[in-house]
Length: 173
Length: 281
Image (tube, rainbow over all chains, first blue to last red; front, side, top):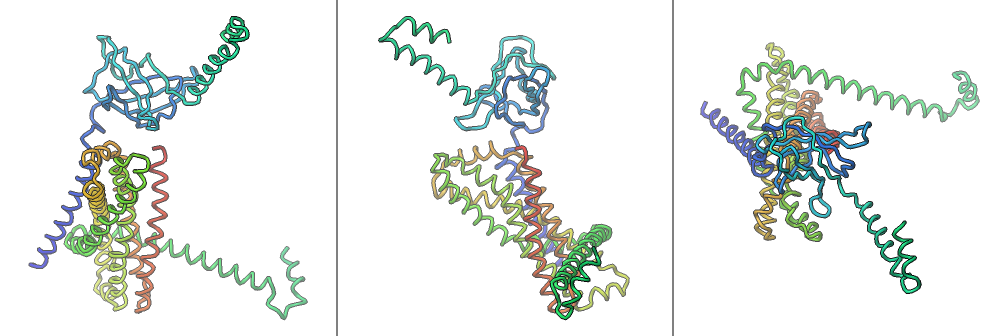
């Protein structure tokens, strides 16, 4: 009996250590305190382009995480991306809140940034955000930049020859 | 089609011929496939029997406690020491690479994610298979070789219920706890290297880790992995012991097979589970 109790003690210590390790991992490494379940409400936003936004990407307002993207789908009628995201009920936003797709850092993941509007009516479950700004696509940005550069460069080059005509041609393009 | 080869082979019937060796090879291959299938079926039947006879081991939980002691408590030292070393190596290697991109502060993220998602469950399961799995196989195999299992059957005691099921559940309960301890000690090892030796900021080490590690996607998936590995390793260990030829040679072969098969099964299951769990993330 005595030996058995020692064995039980060791097993107890082992199980306690295992549970402590799990608790350490959950609280210290994974930070269970940031809401992962909790009470939330779902809001929808439509974007022309979501870039590389992923499901479970964070939703931030003023840089603070307030929710997560729950689904991304394509609407074949309007050819828009429909993004559903959940926001913790602790955070209430006005009805005219704007949603932008932003990038964390230069190469970081994309997230939804909410900027609160001035409406007195708050968003509720199932509402649709109307003010949206799509993700910035690098190729489009570079294309625009090159186009602007070309439009800038042309009149400057041909200015010495004949100023007025070349400028008019460039701007009409 | 069946007649043509026969007429062709007739003139040189004195030699074994290409067709003869081909036929022997085919027979060999077919026999091997059949043996593998029969063994797989036997393992499946054995697994069902273990679950079916699990009742007594929970009614007499002392039996399972004894096995948790042998499989879990006695593996604590090797698991925690290896975890510490693996975490420290991750810290050193990760720092060396990350510092080139000026993101050494992400070391905590790298150490925690590698350990929680992959290294914790997999390395702990490999160590568990060689430390506890081989011991279980050798013990059951020796019980069979010394006819203790047959003696139990004579006394109308089902050996699967009395010997196999407690060991199975002891291993299944121990494995996730060992993997969690491995990961926790490993993260501590990464902290020792990153913060105490290299001199990263302790605050950013933990906060970067906390913002990147998800409770469900990373921690829970890691625990599920280690549970599945625990079931696989312990089932292989008790099966190889139960199935061992009742000789010294048979027991030694079964112990070797336990370690080799467990390692292969762990890594194969890891590929499948990783593909399922981390597909879209």
